Length: 80
Image 1 (tube, rainbow, N blue to C red):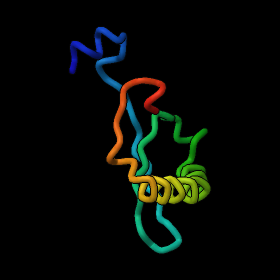
Image 2: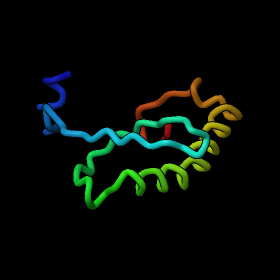
Image 3: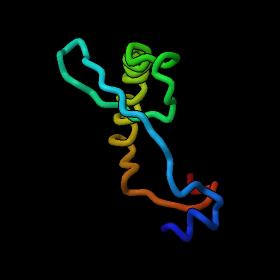
């Protein structure tokens, strides 16, 4: 895998930040981001974005289930 990353010009290491947010249900979610500045990108901002994105993620889940997308594969633009 390392050789493939080098061939594609990808970094060998990346730095990420783990953001812990408590949902309204009391559940804890841990999000991972490359936005490292904690002052500019607060945990509260991630919580709000996660909330906005959740409906979209659920919709993708419904589509995948109805279309059985897990059973499809392809490597070309046309396959996608």
